[in-house]
Length: 92
Length: 225
Image (cartoon, rainbow over all chains, first blue to last red; front, side, top):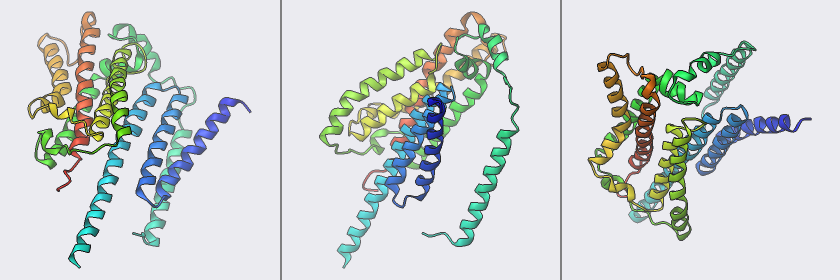
């Protein structure tokens, strides 16, 4: 088998697998990390499709900025949850 | 938390149907379609830049990019409106970074800004351009914010919205300038097309960088919220 074809096959399968894991993973933090991985793999796929412009945009916006926003949101959700449990604890 | 069986079945059916339609659509694409590639290649000599993608984005279909940067401006303004302030000092929290993050930020952020500038310059003749450059610089700003460096707050309540709108305003200024000069909207005169595109790209880079970083800063509630 040609190495190029092998790489493309692995990439395509990895994309399907990672996108399934993003939806299936129970905790949010893992899902966000997998989403970033998905973005980077997608950038590789665009590069393989000879679309370097889209690959750059996908890596920077899809994986980078969106990933940072989602991680930040997860951090705030967790902090709020901890805050709420603390308050409940004080009330008793 | 757990969706009912009916909802799951409906979601599976809908996404499966969408998948079948998408696959059918891809299979129906003509095999040897060059699309508009030939047309773009023929017209490329009349564009101000030599890279086909940048020529399409900022010359042939500049109107699309013009509206796109307007959409980004609206999105950033929308999220700032929820925070009810454009003064970044009001919304950016003080984070307490670990030592590794602090040192890494000091090393990586300047390199990212440099990379952004390089991508902007590269866009005129190779893959790159304003959106990618802006995104990389925005990522640098976000990293700095996360590491507790509040340098973005140096942009006061006047400078921040001004930079946010700079891409849209510059695009519009060029459009008006050309309309008054008797040309059609964003129909650059070939002699200065390259210069106009670089001016627009520079402003769009700044607007994209400030816009994306602003979205992040505005999505960042203070801890006492």
